Length: 285
Image (cartoon, rainbow, N blue to C red; front, side, top):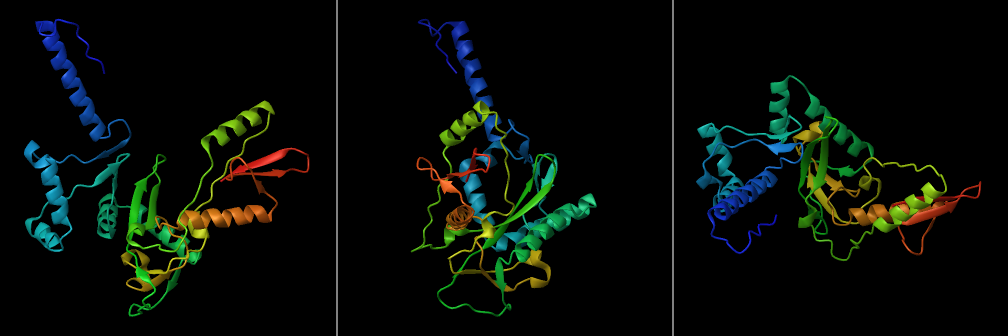
């Protein structure tokens, strides 16, 4: 936003223009902070300006990590504000799921969690042990948490992820490349010039299709039902682990090689194979 007002910068109209531009910029910054440019917002907290300072927010976040704060909140009866996505309340933990589903007289969030747990157990992501199981010193403990999202089509999605930043991947490869943007654009131009059809696809639960090399374990929460508080050794490459992207990329590359694909010399993540009709089939990774 430009505010070049000429040589006479102290004129009454120029002073008014500067004040107006300053107020517009301030309003734009506030709109960006509140995410008003997308269909995603948070609940309004009716607090005064002094309590919304950065220093107070940091102190509040530090205080919320203490175990004693939960009991104080319950004693004071402090009102809880839910995050809102597309007009639907989004939980933060299992207690919020129970409260929101009871309030709406539905079981949407419980079904989303059950669907994710069923997929993880079906793909054998864990080696489930008893609650009193103790792994040897080679294993590292990793905390897992849930990420809840309302999609644009108003479907509820629950994703179990690991706190991979707290795990030491020393000695393991964490590098995973992706296809270049210029490769996608060039191949789209070639397909349009040859009047070829472009097909796209998606792999559900992609990362957990591959095995992890990290020696880590965790403990289940209330979301796992009968396996609650059980110790589980993580076998598959769960999301947010530092080596998960590399493990999936290696497994998928081995699969493409086994069915005859060859990677391009310019872009190793653009794979090609000759069709029986003589045309060239290209696949991105």
